[in-house]
Length: 233
Ligand code: AMP
Image (cartoon, rainbow, N blue to C red; front, side, top):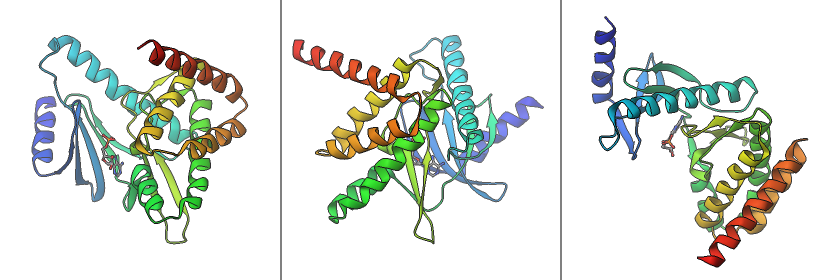
């Protein structure tokens, strides 16, 4: 019976639309129980020992689901988890219909010379990350591609966090500081000359959380270590 169930998933995926083929996972768009759904399938990596690979893949799937649920319980927008299959390592998630990545939004807004609008977005990102860190969720892969913006009819926009595959639970300011450092590196290389915008994001992060000063202190330390390393290199 269990085998029959797991057989149904490859068949389901064969009819779904593949939207991303990554090194660790494939992402599909499909309809599941009548709802627009994103399926993330982690596949086996042949270069890893099968037992180790199974353990790692299982852990990443568990961590991803756990972090999404923890965020949603705290009122942080992240896709609803519809279904998880631990045999085929598939997570079925709510598709955030009508959304674009924050990366694309920043790029197109800067091109259309409406850059002032982006201050609001930077503040919103700072607030949502402060809330996520207050829940002790460390994302592990913060980039502007892992944030979605859904534009609503009333002109408001809702910000969602996605792709928690490298996330974990930690209360340590150092882990949260590194999370912000990863974002800073990704942000400034994807969107050149946005230092002021990123500073605004950090100010908003700092204002939104009581625990933020220890995190920002760690971020400064990690930045300094990064600078020293690049000088030696
Ligand atoms: P990921 O590997 O999880 O970062 O997903 C790859 C891409 O699929 C993202 O950059 C988004 O464009 C899209 N995507 C992932 N999850 C969702 C979702 N829940 N709703 C809409 N699009 C998504």
